[in-house]
Image 1: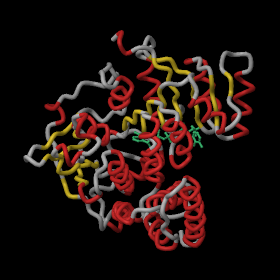
Image 2: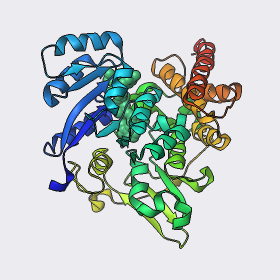
Image 3: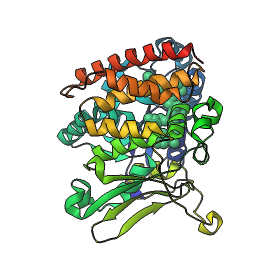
Length: 398
Ligand code: NDP
């Protein structure tokens, strides 16, 4: 594997689920990857441990108080603590970083992902919210700088693997008929509508197949995650929303598929472990060992498929509708969902209130042309305020 060279890697969201899986893969290949920057939000102790283990040149916590504590504990070591988001973005754009794992959760990941795109870095994109909020701006920045954008979400990584390089820019010209996103169906796949609306946070977080952070786990339970992924796929693969299908596949072995005009359907399979797409992204266009167990289909037994139910899972419908509307509607949908999911995790609103907050916010916030980052950020702020008002109103009823 000599020709992989030595990549200088920034891991943004280093203390999270994707961050740990990434560091696990990086740790297996110390000759090919050097961790130069680690960033997270407020996990001082975890970040301290990671800095001791990986000895990056730079570290950063977004929460100012936590960042000051980190600077204290790292004083006198080889790691310099960056002062703020501006310095973080400058570091990402500098020669100290070749590859960026964008794995900050939610809208908070947008600025750093854009900084990587503008600077022409190789981006491993886990932070789907960046594309959902500002797909046009991010894809434009990637095209302008010549940045390499590799999807890490397992579904999009699967689609990327199923497409020939000449089909990725304009799939329809390469004979691609549609994209089939698989969904596990989450923990409430077999639940009745009345049980789903009163589900608790521990029930929503208990995903049957994947181990993930709390926000994406709740999104998986509501199928909002699949809706966000549909929007993400439409930007990544330049596909109209009506050419993206969703099929429930409870075993999470097929990570997604591509349907071609000649009747062929190509699928990518593997055990549900994010280290596979992460290793693929790190080594692309080559392959490296990831630590993932080999897939044993005789143990899996059967692969089954079901239709997605938009009635029991209205968040999926809302995300699809926002994508069809275009403009800033998806950014509004994403912001309202983030507010609602946090309120649900904080036991302020019910699970059934999440789509309520999203739907009301979408109907009240104007849809605008996302002509600049300022417009997107403004609509994100407005949507958060509107969603927070609905949360306040609904709180009283829980
Ligand atoms: P986690 O909740 O496990 O981790 C989130 C990470 O983001 C933590 O390191 C957290 O730091 C950091 N963070 C939060 N806010 C900020 C901020 N303002 N600035 C810098 N860092 C911040 O999330 P996941 O790892 O599950 O998900 C990360 C992203 O990857 C999400 O966008 C998700 O949709 C996507 N994704 C995740 C998958 C998975 O299997 N987990 C699969 C596919 C996509 P701290 O610990 O200090 O709070």
